[in-house]
Image (cartoon, rainbow over all chains, first blue to last red; front, side, top):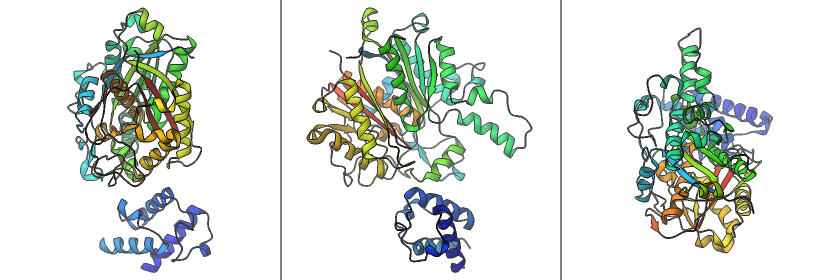
Length: 81
Length: 402
């Protein structure tokens, strides 16, 4: 499940930022990937739609790496199971 | 020096009441118009609070025959226009050749959403024929011109949160050039519709509790609704007819950030403020009061403070800066109009409105924000800032008339 979420997060970031999949790892820093706050909101929108979860606004300011996003979505997805 | 233009009439309908007097009394008392939302399907919305107009009954202002043509944003525009024109002591015959410019960010959302719901959700085969004339962004301008008998230059202006302030620019230009003697400038928006609220939720900039401009614990903006209207005329025309003059609309400055679609820029905001001061021939050190854009978001309030420092330098510490969205919410395209009304009355009455809900100053917010209590103090020169999404900036300069 977590690996699936990680794959989808990376795919969505790659699509939004026009990056190669290989350029993004779970440790990648969101700032270094060039994600602005608006990028973060639009990526979250896609993830919320895909995994049917609600990501609270406060969480967004705490995200630093791809791992943070994967952890957050995994937690929300398992809570709603 | 351009032809002096003055404000001779004011009107507004907002979360703080149905008239400019109610509005002014409320902001002088630091009262909040931010309340729990009503008349909306709250169980399906994350948003629970907003600055809605209290006790609003359209039939109090319009007949059954008129209402089918009037989206809420048109209703609010007409109510504010009626009050402003009456307060200016102008009859229909006086304003028929005047201009009327209406700033709106959203247009007739309620009308559009109603029709789209019928088509997409209910599967209806046809759209109501009044959808376009009622919902189009220029509908409010059309309806004001029809109701008030204005047949001069009439049109609508859109720049999201700066729409009303931008609407002043062509009005000022037309009066200065002699094209018209009088212009009614209105800002109106009615954003409390299901679809639009959902859209705002998507941006993640709305506060869950209240609007606290410049405070450390500020958590975003609060949506509002309503309309503000001012009557502008040349000083010569106003004096000739013995009009009461509130203040001088001394200038307007505009700029675009040409940067980010939502994040504001210090340089862009500073450019608009400088442009307003230049247009109004106002020295930096003469500005007493700033009615801030002050939305209560982390980014705007910090950026705006920096812009004020950049423009005013050492004088920034002497400015009084208040964020009245803390009381009337953020009514989008109407904001600039409500804030112009507040700024004009601050000069006229010698009372500076407070920034309500202020707790402690946020990081990088180090100016005098007139926290929580209005201040009785004679002011001569003020600016009102509007900095919209996408970096469309408009700043109005207002000066007392001796």
